[in-house]
Image (cartoon, rainbow, N blue to C red; front, side, top):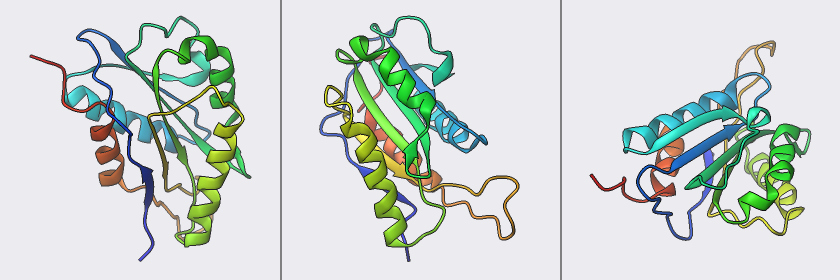
Length: 175
């Protein structure tokens, strides 16, 4: 059976100071990536973190005080969504001093070849930014667009998505 998520475990969880915000920014064309970002945001909130969920294109203010930034976007035709790329460009100076985790929405076909291709495409997009050193990178399964023919494929693995969110920040903030 093919895997429904490819996850690289964080090298070390970040431990944000109480009151610091975790920004979950996302780019989405049809809403699937937004739903994954919402699930990650909800999981972090359940664990007691102050989380801000926002489309990447709408993040305009400073993010330098964020404890962590989680950035997610789909991979279409071999390219990571342009709103995610623009977000990285716009906030480059601040992101150098902030823990960053990245996820891509990848294959809609469960074959090993498609999973590897999606991961390679995300790695290629990230390699164009040598200044960026994510603490975690994941590729989650994609979803057919709403107008797709039957059967409608949805390779998102919600348990894997929540588990990845759990590993991002270690234990919740002190009570």
